[in-house]
Each structure stands twice: as C-alpha cells, then as structure tokens.
Image (cartoon, rainbow, N blue to C red):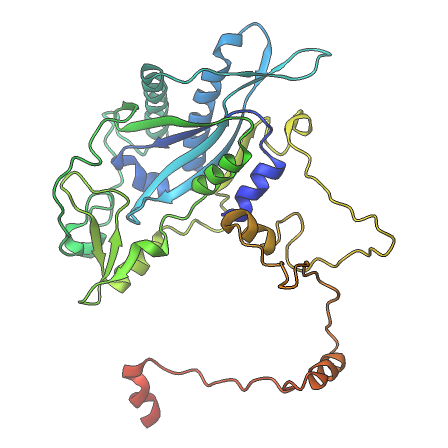
Length: 376
C-alpha cells in the first residue's frame, strides 16, 4: 500500500489536480460481479468511460482530448463482506492534444449533485444492459444466479449477518443515514475529495487510502466468549457498532476477498496507461541524487526490488521515522553484502558471537492434540 502510493506520486501522477471518485453497485449485482473477473473489468471500463466523457464534454468536436486515471479495485467492505467497488483517482481535468503544439491541461469544475446523478444513471443503464446480454439478469432485471444457501453465517452476503451473533447497540445517532451524492437504482457515485496540484503529500495519503486493505488490525479485538469483534467504521442505521465472528468465520470472510490469481487490482487508464502515446510527456521524472565526491562508490541496494522504494524511505514518508539515522548523527549505509560462509564465521568469531546456527525447534501440534501425537 505505502510502496504503491509512493510509486504513483513519484512516477505516475503529474502535477495537476486529482479528484477521488468512487462507484458502488447494488447488492443484487455484487455477488455475480465478484465471481467473474472479465465482468468486473467491463463494469470498471464503463465507469471510466462515463467520467472521461464528463471531463471532455466541453471539447467535443473542437479538439482531441485525453484524460487519465488510476483505479483501485476493492473486493470487500469494512465489515469484510464480499462487496466489489471501485476507488478511482482521476486527473481533475483533461489534456488537450493539438497538432504541433505542446500538451495543455485544462482543469475541470467541481461536479454538481445532479451531474453525479446523471453519471450514475448512465452507468446503471449500461451495466444492466451488460448483465442482460451476458445472461446474468432477466429482462426484468432480476439476477439469475442466487447466493448459495449454505451455513447460516454464509447467508445474506451483503446484508447485516444477524446469524453471526448479537451486535453491540449504541444510541441511534443517525450516523450513516443519508443519500449518496449521486445515486440511481443502487448505483452510487461519489466525487467529493480533490487534491490541488501542489500538495503531493496529501496526494500520497489519498493514494494510500485508495489502495488500503479492507481491514486494519486496530479494528479487531477478541471478545470474552472467544469471538472476534470487528469495529465498524461508522454505526449502521440501527446503531450497531460491531460485528461478531468466530475465528473460522473471520478466516472464511478474509479468504473470500482474495482476488483470483493474476488479477491486477491497480489499473491505469487514458494518458496514464502504460502504452499511452503521450504518457512520457506528462508523468514525472523521478529525482536521482548523485554523490560526485572523489571517494564515492556505488552502494549495492539489496533492500528493494527493481523500480521499488526501499523500506527506510517508506518508513520516513509514512511515519516520519528515519531508520538510517545513526546515534552519532551520521547516516547508516550499506558497505557490502557478505555471503561467503568462511568470511561470516571469521567476523562472528572476532565479535565473539556464536558461529553455529540456532537449533531448529520441532513443529508442535495444537495443545488439544499433543497427547494424541505423543501416544502415537
């Protein structure tokens, strides 16, 4: 998450305004959408196209334009329910392409609520038609595939799972109540947050938010009866603040959110796409710091993959913690990587440290099965 955000800020997003758009779909379509990879890509493409049309509407028939976006696919919600939705960071404007002229960026105005409603309506109509063409909905719009009625805790995939146990009730405060800024037939479109062109730090935080996992460790705690309590991000309409799951139910839910092998959850569109013709003209060039002192030597970098960000830099960017700061006031740097066992033994022996590897402990069975294994 942090490495992806750093990559987007350093190497992808140009210095132009960026707006955060979100698309969520009605409950009756999410289960089918989560099971079919190609269908999910098609729905995302519909949403991207509609927003691009909105940005380029004022230039239609006048000049060639191209937008840019980076989409993050989320398979679950904050309660670990299988609920595919999309967080997309759009360049909040459009690049105008004119013959023999440099690219120029034209910023866009903030979308109004009626405008968001129109976009949601067009997305809803196109997605419903797509589902009908592929035989996933009847002509009346009813889903043909129903969730499997298995164990009680697996029912009602997208509703509040009352079979998971009691809920902690708080005083109903109305939190969570209210219509979406643009909502039509269960399709909700949000586009409220905008990051100015100059605020790269805020943009990186927004990228981390868009690429975040569905659940943070801080929201989990163990109840007295052994169940796991998940704190909801905000109370539900009935005032519920927590969901209770057994450990097995928790693992089952987390497993259902794992994407299929080979599925990319971060995708690039428009002028930011990898093969875009004008991409190199707009993406930032990463800064390269060169040490030109006479005694300088290239340092082997073993802490990061090719093109990635090393852990020390990530810690500094995310937590403002400099892991390479030496107590003497200088900087810690890698001198060499030693792999020869003979040299390692000599160094450890000189430091009066053990040269023998620590003994491996035998794998143990769970406590309730130890007696069974010992008797066998």
